[in-house]
Amino acid sequence: MLLGRTSELKYLNNYYDREGSQLLVVYGQKRIGKTTLVKEFMKDKPHCYYLARACSEREQTYQWSRQLIQDGYELDPFPSFHDIFAIISRHSKGKKVLVIDEFQNVVRAGERFMQELVSFVHSQWNRDEMMVVLCSSSIGWIENSMITRIGDAAYELSGFLKIRELTFEDIVQRFPNFRIEECVEAYAILGGFPGLWNQFDDRLTIQQNICRNILDVNSFLFEEGERMLTDQLREPGVYNTIMASIAAGSHKLNNLYLHTEFSRAKISVYLKNLIELELVEKVFSYDTAGKENVQKGIYRISHPFVDFYYTYMYPYLSSLQTCSVGEFYHRYIMPDFRKYVAGYYKKVCRQHLMKLNDRGKLPIMPDIIGEWVGKAGELDIIAQDEEGKTLVGLCNWERPTSYEDYENLLSYARKAKINVDYVYMYTAFRFDEKLNLESKIKPGLKLVQLSDM
Image (tube, rainbow, N blue to C red; front, side, top):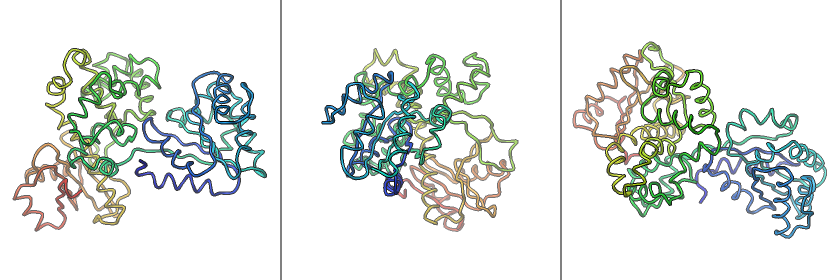
């Protein structure tokens, strides 16, 4: 089921409707839904799909030829790439779509692929038209190495489309049988990755899904968290150490140095690689006058499922082999799972505010909705408009929200030297009576319950 990809599908169709041939790069993290998107795009068009292997150029052409022969094409067992493109182009009438998935595997093997692809597409300008979609799940390679690797062929690329995570609103649509609280918990585990969503069943509880579909050694997701690193990075021992350290609470460079005893320079290099893969993020507080109170250089695991793996599974792998999944869940996950989900509830609340902003339903029109991480406290939400009007917010997932929480929020804002004009308070439980009364007399105070979202 294709959810939340209307703009991406429109983007691809707009290119297809243009005259001539095109070369497009579509990329994003694994399990983000690239293949589902391109399948939806090409289903009513003459098309050919090929998943590139990590192998030599000769083996690549052999495997591709073998697939095409099985599909009814007449081709030599070891054709050139040009021969492959030509026979695909001649096979049917109308503009064709050629999708080459994980194309970085072909490019890394040699130079012939891109040279022959560009040459062929150029020769098609006044003949049969073709739209070539080059897909990749290697984000770091696309954004940092591809242009250098393919050389002048980069000038022939028509466009880039980065596939990003789906939103909380999409996961609610995907799992209609989950309660809203369960959707937040599912989002905290699986993030906006529809390839991971497919492993959950909304006829089961979140606990049952975790036990059956993650903790069970025979489940698809059991090793997926670590696989996301080892498939793309060398030296898994170093990366596992850094990821486990961050998950355990070492969020600053010096903390990571003290925990791992790796040099700061080494840690910085490896963190850079993890950030390029969008597995780790460096958190920057919203720019305010109170910079002396801001914590700088905070690192977090940004991929929800990888975060779940290194928080709950990696440290206790021995117990996973000896405990029942139910016993493991109650011993290692249940005690602080609500605290874990709280961090992702903040992301859900910010998405809700961004949606209101897109619809013009906020009292201000900010360009960015961010957070402020201070030494004495945090602002879960902060946004400003061009005139300096400021909105701050609190996202409370773990307990009922009180008037004291409201006062603490304003106190943190003062320490950040922020003049607050509007306050949005989010809760998964309820607001106390005093806070409800305050919201009735203060038009700048908005209370939002989970059901309102």
